[in-house]
Image: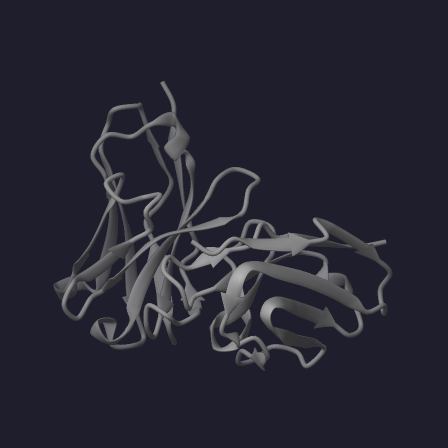
Length: 108
Length: 119
């Protein structure tokens, strides 16, 4: 089972700043099989990025994904207040699919 | 419009059985996999297993194999998650989610079902 470690656990930034979230895998993940989800309080997760760098339908272009091998990142170019939620990475290329522990983004 | 609508919150005692549901609409039920994901209170997401409604091909995470059963009823476009004997540690929110393949991201999610197991 591939272990995904997300860092930092909490990221505290001001609105308008750039946020970079990290997801590190215990073994190589094909970039085709890495996704990022956003979860707002009391709601189900929603797909942001798949294939490491492809935005899902309707996702704002301030969200971007990159990375390969064991190191992936999600970047929010200019933080907006509604981005202050939890983000999870997931690998779905190796069975079982696994999620990272999540990064909480806070707006100062 | 693609919708996955889950059954309502449940409260059970340890040792009791439970089945929760996920009814889909807005797409061909038999053409997409349905995954189940657990979220314990204040914690992250855990992938439990997945089923292909077309032929009921089912895969489980080793962590959940033998602990739950995933099934479908194609007549009513519904997937189920079943426990035969609940434990307090099964208290969590359970989500169903749609994916094009086992090796695919989940693009639509149900709203979640809160299960509370307490004596």
